[in-house]
Length: 594
Ligand SMILES: Cc1cc2nc3c(=O)[nH]c(=O)nc-3n(C[C@H](O)[C@H](O)[C@H](O)COP(=O)(O)OP(=O)(O)OC[C@H]3O[C@@H](n4cnc5c(N)ncnc54)[C@H](O)[C@@H]3O)c2cc1C
Image (tube, rainbow, N blue to C red; front, top):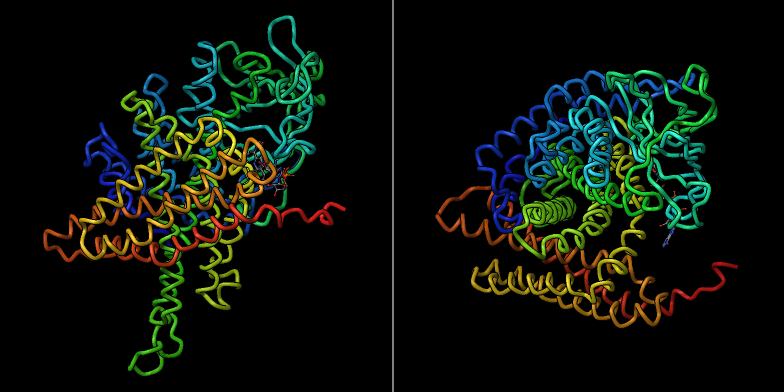
């Protein structure tokens, strides 16, 4: 099944919904041209690699990683097209386009192949970290080739004993007389930790100096290239870091997930002449590592949320195409003879509309978050940064949980064929499964939402958002029968979210176990309500355009999807509210820990 990038949906979202000003200062024609070109590239060059990559994953032999078939050629075309630099500053060779537009392009890359698009996604994170915390010299040296995509980036946090809890990081960094460091230790699960698609790999590594205190306060961030640079700034001598093995995975099988060993004296590397230890350079100050890593993680968390949207889009397209062709039975209430396509069965429509609604709502929410980042960057709106930061765990947590639900429904729509690998529906489900785990599990996002995003500012950002939802409800009241139906779904969801915010503020400081026991339901409630808010804005925009008398099926679909969400998805919020407010006592099942 081919992938078709949802260009019109994206343009509609960017122009009418993604927040005040849309994708300003970009004119709609330029936005359309970028999206259409990106669609051509994603559909024509990346998407055909998705299935072969699943069947023939990257391999590691004698420490050298060979990418999946076709990946190196496609990556070269990606670099030649200038796609890595879309949102990055022109000063370093990027195009300086709005993040909201770049996020839409990223969705296309991920929709075409999650495994492929992970490589540029991690490079984006490395670029963000260096832009924020790198020294002038580090930026001058490392950013231009990263922004061009000539070199790629990785994020090295995880170790066998340090997953969600990075205070356990043990990787060691020893200071040298020349100001550099030597790193020793093992990192696991490193995405694109090794490959030969680019001339160099820039690892950003969390490690601990020998005199550092225990816990997160002792962690520092280091830049460790695969190849050290020669006098002309070109990749030269091999550094003392190598891929020990690649993981065998449930999904995203074409993305090399590496175990990396730093500083064990790799033969033929710098270790031969100067002794073991991977050469690295401090980014920012010593012991600031985790704060800096958060910059990279936030960029990556947002991007993983877009992966949830992307896999939802691809699974939805495939399920709809199948449901229009597969003939089985007669639809309930229909007079037509037996032998109708299954899309006519009300329950299949319920599944297909759930898939569409749980893709479009999170997409709008994500683009709203990206537009807030653009406004914050432009200094136009004093609340924009807090809004963006509040939304990031929701985009990561809710959009990826939704992506999993959508991919699972995609299998169900296919019936038995969904369970058979040839259709590709099963691959979407397998690929989607990692999204709620890496870059912080849903629980870790939810803890962030409760602690840093709700309790820390006394609920200020949450309440501003609740007020914005209420303002949209007031607009819905003037939008005829569809507006009224939408408001009927949105109002109780907003009230449930307001109750949950009050509960967190009241309970968090006195009974953290009760508050954090409700953290994931709180994240789901907030994500679901705010995605519903964005769909309500989509309904308003579509209704206003349709009022001109056009009978455009695209606008009709926007209204139908929003109304379906109001009737079928928003009622889930009442259940999450109840679990948050009343669920804590039933979590005290002490026998579990026995
Ligand atoms: C394919 C793949 C690619 C990856 N890519 C990278 C990469 O490029 N770079 C990198 O550094 N890492 C990477 N990772 C690692 C990934 O980020 C971690 O697997 C993830 O953060 C979870 O850590 P863990 O596996 O140790 O699980 P654990 O931390 O052991 O978690 C196990 C369970 O306990 C729960 N839990 C743990 N702590 C808490 C808490 N405080 N509150 C509530 N629940 C909690 C979790 O939610 C989870 O359900 C990757 C992993 C995979 C599988």
